[in-house]
Length: 226
Length: 184
Image (cartoon, rainbow over all chains, first blue to last red):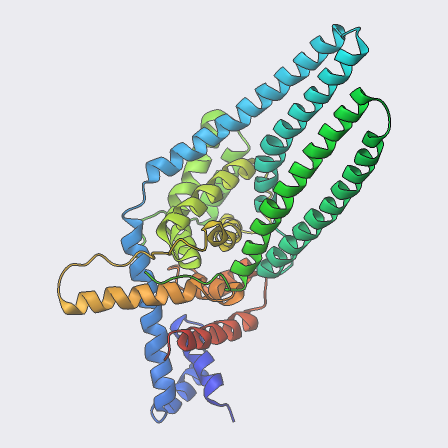
């Protein structure tokens, strides 16, 4: 004997045209005598009506021209990214062709060039391309919401393990920096400072961001009502 | 929400896929056809999922940028609309987290046209939208999809990647949870 929970599901199915004739008749008979299910029916219809009404009103306020422009401008960003990478490649070839003969100058310029290229490549390339790659690479044959959760959990694990690797690298560089001559020590300690800065941004920025996204998926964001 | 936008039937989808694999104007026209057909329901879905018009607009921008990038390579395993809704679901579910906790979310409400009844309706719509946006992702997703006009339960099941029976049981659980959240 179906209970009210089954009839409530039948109410939703009927509202969306998924109920057969026999089930519809059974539902009508039940509704004629069940206040609780009639209340569920009214509440369900009202919720959908309010949600659709809110969307209709908000729709009229969207600047679709801006959305189109955003898509066009973002395409230009990809083009400018390709041009800047090509420029970096040409600059690298030019720099290698005129490699400084002074070893000290070579070390400093090499270190600076690597830092700049890493920062630029990481933020511009992996940020934008990685984001769109993840949006478009939708899992086939798997539940979508579960895959979003799993992807977030995986990215948090990657950030955490990357942080451990950075700590280890900083420790090794720091220990090596305490040895050797004054010039080597300075370069290595600067390297340690840079790695710790990246670690701080990653742990307190990226990881916190991902953790907040996880909380949002669980409905645990917590918000103040207007 | 009236369906003033073109429907993506089989013929139009085939034309879009052919155009997307072309160059220049053909590709632009293909994207424009997808944009025109789906911008309204995608926005509605993003609004229900995020609970905030500005977050929904940000999510819509990301969705159509992703669609623009990937449309030429889309192989058509699912319908274009299903594919776009899946991207939208993914983008909007994570959009809310970008709002700082200190910023109050202000869901769009029907414009106040006068009278106590309209004021009450506006407040009720606001409460519903805020309550939906605070549900766990599984419940939020199914409620939001069913609130988008023109989406059938089979397509919703395909979008979510779950059996049809799961869609109905999840919708029922979501409504129960929403009622609890609203104190009913």
